Length: 291
Length: 315
Image (cartoon, rainbow over the protein chains, first blue to last red):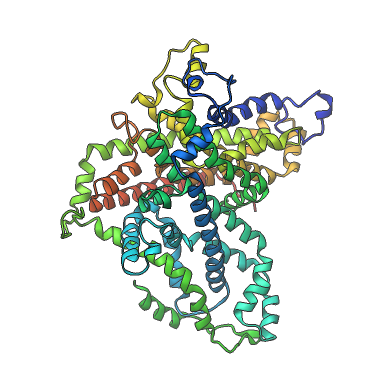
């Protein structure tokens, strides 16, 4: 492998193809084989799935596995719940973290430093430390305040994540990099803080908002431990929890399980491919911020 | 909350606000600031800060929901924890898992990122294949890998049979199960590591690589002596980030082995979950949670200390 330090593409025309293909093709096969095998099994008959050696190209395609899986568990409902939870969580974070992030970046108010320090401290603590009291608080809220945000309601999956310390910190850092001059001239013209935030700061912050949205969406969509604790009724489950429960009940029905799995991951995969650029840039941003 | 005292003290030390250029409006900034901050801060305080204090308090109580009262028992939960053979096993499993998963993911990510950091044909296809693992939930990932590693019908055993390797029990074998979980999670995190390393590789100045080549350095030497040091901030970030996540391993264990066989995959968070939400020993579970937090703090502190010595920051 001689091309490590070679300037990109300067000498590649001498070769019929880059030697890196010899590395990348096998690597890619390993990376996508789980997806392929998942899709293949999802349309096999039970007889061919439970056959050794494995049947790599099924002789009969049994698409009925999909309706069968939908019959056994409401994956449409799980999908809807996941979508509602993820979209609401993203919107709530964009609004609440923008407001708080802007206040921490630009406004002077009593206790700003102390409050910011407390919020930052929660960022360091792993979820496992807070999950038991969070469970108790959520249960209490459901009984005494509003059933919709209590245990066994999807509201319980939204409210605790409706604002995050990471989101506030991330947006505050971004807002601080923006030039103050635009905001000041708008203030001189009599615009309120809210108007300044909405009309001037947020339009300039589109990349940061998109990053926060993408990361929050991924987190929410894939969250498992908190839904596992907070939700028990089938009709309130999100996709990962519904899928895990389905697996618990149908552990040996591989074809149904794989059909269910395809239905669970396909929507996210499609969203991901459609917005790949955003997701990749957002994840890269966390790394660059850390370095 | 100890906020009010801190607030008052703060006021005295605050320098006279630099209210230059007439930033004065009808509504006082005090009020606006608090109005903007309150909704978000309330959620974080209620579901973040209060629980941190509360679980610390609970870790000094006997609290198992069955008993009506929650008496303080001092350090008894922590003392029990140190002598609990399952905790000791869980710590060992967590550390073994972390020690394999973190370097494994970093090496896979670095290798693929270097291979993919060039403009060749199909490159976006290769990259997309790696990125796609990021879109998969841990649950979907675990289900696919349980199937791949199925002892009776799995593809991996089929490949083994082609290579003349005897059939394995994988997740059913106490001495293999944890390693299967290592493999599935490395696969699941590869896309993340590739993204981080690819982004960092974009920042390696071509001039430095050219200079090394002019000086007669082989491409391997250039990679080791120029590229890898320049990537060290990204490596440190990945090491810390992956370690924090590895110590919190739960989803894959819950789905594939439930800590078995023979507790061979019981990691700390799984045991904590088991104590808290299967046995409802909130007091003991809170002590385990703080113990986990302590381990994470110590390990990441060591990583930062050691990492700083090997990390080169430009400018």
